[in-house]
Image (cartoon, rainbow over the protein chains, first blue to last red):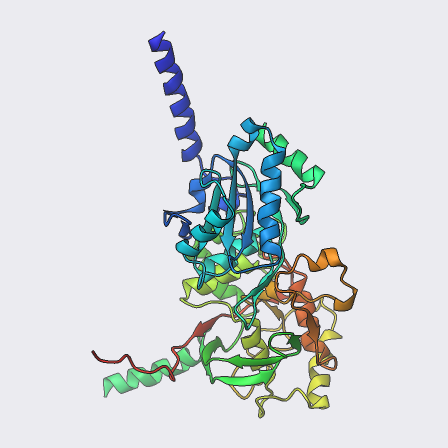
Amino acid sequence: MKRLLLAMLLSVTTVTVCAAAAPLPADSVLQQTGTFTDQSGRNFQLADRRGHVELVSMFYTSCTYTCPLMIDSGLGVQHALTPAERERLQILLVSFDPKRDTPAALAALATKRKLDPSHWTLARTDADHVRKLAALLDVRYRELASGDFNHTTGLILLDADGRILAKTDKLDAVPDASFLRAVRKALN
Amino acid sequence: MNRVALLIALLPVVAHAGGDYVSIPAGQYRSVLNYEDTKGNNTVARFELMKTPVTNAEFLAFVQSHPQWRRDEVPGVYAEKAGYLAHWQAPLELGDAAKPEQPVTHVSWFAASAYCEAQHARLPMWAEWEYVAAADTTRRDARSDPVWRESILGWYSKPSTSPLTNVGQSPPNVYGVQDLHGLIWEWTEDFASMLVSSDDRSQSDSNRLKFCGATALTTQDRENYAVLMRVAMLSSLEAVNSTSSLGFRCARSLPDPESPPKELP
């Protein structure tokens, strides 16, 4: 019995290792290099996020208008899922604003919005990689003279290999039905 | 003495080598883009800009040393397979349809950015491009001159099927930069940032929601069609796109001469 368990564990490990070792598909946005830092100050590469279906978007912490709605819509997707589905979904928000969005600023927002750190990653990177990620996701933005940002919003669904499966620009606590169907399909 | 002779011998070669940068002084200008926050007043810090667009030969050398940018190697997220370097005969061969000294086209924004990065450079910002492109051969801002405007517009009436001329055939502008008008469209670093809507008053509330900061954009100089066409064209692109008349040149930031020296303890 123990041996069987061990064998099962080993086979699971092998599968995981193989998945990590295979090159990312040509249409994966996780190929983008660059160091990102999350709200706890931990550095990561986008490729490290492989293996989880995730929702990605871009935002900045001092944004008072649409960015709170974006977090609401991420929470809305989470709430519409079953507990098992919710467990498998990751959410990544990358800041447009490397100057002001330090890990501490990201952490403050995560705390304020009660975002569960095991599923929500708020991250920053340098201005050059912000632009590259925005280009990959086709997010448009411009820094204003005030230091705020004018930007398009929405949630983007990536499969476990970082391929774009669906997008929604509906910002609402009640998710867009077709987008939610795509999230469910990806998770199951 | 020998050294001087060697230098003299090298000079013409250096002068004609591709990828030369011209130093552009800092300045202010009125942009055709009238953002609510800037009111169309742009300040450009001093920088360097390539004298001419990047050529097929130069891009071929880059692809040879960076095989991940070969058309048969490039990941689909960085360039549309169907268009990227499609006019070259083979992944590492220009062929008859792509002359070495013609500007390279059929390049995605990602590929153009990667080329510039390999040069320790970057793509120019739109404001930098527009600032330098406002000049003619004698004036830093020739845009109010109807004759100059007409001469630039002339290019747009040429059929796009006629082959591109080699780079460096047009007279240098007052900064010494060539081919900003009349040859190709050019990528800018921030091509995706211009957010032009055809009529910003017609936006519905749901559209408005997409913008954080609610800053509208209007174009203030409706006479300047040539530049407005560029803005419209660039805004319509995605970073993976490439077309037969879209190329690029690189720019480099320069340290700010006004910045105070570090204080001694």
